[in-house]
Image (cartoon, rainbow over the protein chains, first blue to last red):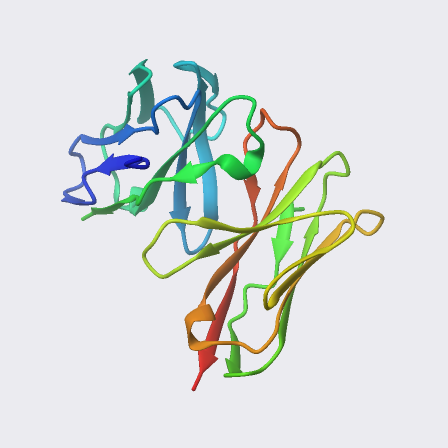
Length: 115
Length: 110
């Protein structure tokens, strides 16, 4: 199994630009999670989907952030416009429904730097 | 109060030492408990689940105290390769997201 795939692995952009992060979950997994990790705040859940439907987006910091899951094999997290405080590592994770929480798998992350 | 609290460390220990990490959680409805390991610039990965009766996996022992809402991880005979950040994680059910602590950083020194 290829595992959770994220792209790009690194992104450097300037303030005000649009950033799109991509995730391909493990095939057959029903849940998809987007997390953000910083030294100050640790690992924060931004939003999660079940069967492509957003379930809880209360962790999305503000309207500049949006996430979509158009099908079971693809999700995007978009930041528009980006700001320096958005610099962080963004992880995508997936899990199969009916499996227990320890079956959650993370992708390698996207390291975002906003200048 | 944070849902899951850990001492951030760092813990700097010599090879062969025994080190213990503690974690407290605020939601008494939490049902499942885990320790994840995160290497520098990598994603978190499951280290071990934590069972009510306590469990051991080689040099690693996890304990749960539901009455005190407290979880621990003990590492015996530390190796250089144990250097990482250890994340305490709780779950309320099989269909809710995991809740992560901010992690405890361990450095094992030769």
